[in-house]
Length: 385
Image (cartoon, rainbow, N blue to C red):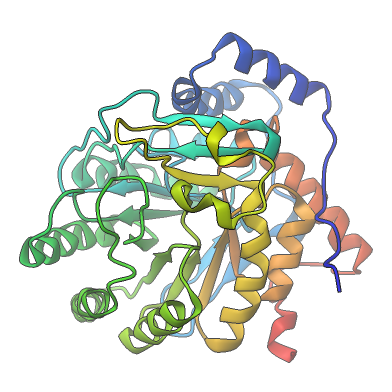
């Protein structure tokens, strides 16, 4: 039986303006850096965005971590604001939360080759090979700590994604770096996201090394038990794992006692043949001298995201889930919440829809109205399935 078509959207005047802007500013990474500038600009306008009361929800966790009260279940994914710049202004774009980073121990310039970002318009997708460029955990934690109160007043939660430095292979150094970034980020943010699955640094991912993953998570959670207050700890996984590896990883994650999962990271571009894409792989732009294609994000990933959330929710009924991958319409947000997600994360849609999250919030409200859902607070129909 074929699955129903995904909710879609047509282009409006704002989207056509965005297309014009993309033609004038052709470098996709330059446009990425302008996102915070645009958020600040919107914040100066006399008409401010206000979240609809029906979208406000409190995300509660099975391990009694501090709950998150947000004005929308739509968060900005890690990579969208790598430097924690102008965080409160992102409320004007409709976000209910931001995961900033990913943060390494020290400043990291990312991959040296250019370009590092390319759009795949046929699939409304993006190739990303930035390579975790960021100013380091100390800078990011200071900015999050500085803005946290103002963001809470706007009903936005702030998380920090932390990771090891690309290229480090010594396990003792990996443990030391993850511990330091975790401790510093934990003291500043509402929640922590462990990014152990980045596909675009040219180095081995940690999420498929099940034994090492288990050791890292156990170490991190031992540290968390010494810290107060208790905050949510998420692990971000890659979407390209086979079933056997995924089941082993899920068991490892459950045994470690982490609070939740982020499903998923970008899809390795070199494996894009496993996606149903209109863009042929030979038409991808190589983003490294080696010919590597980076990680793919965008609409095409939704084919994996929704069934994965349903499957993993059944496997781990108490685990918090943030869904990420191909979410570009408010009806998709509601579908994911019904499937078992507590919130969603987006980024690539911002390259294709003008004021995307504000539009998605409106679509979500309309979908709720058609389903006779008065409020998202406490809405979790999957608990009864």
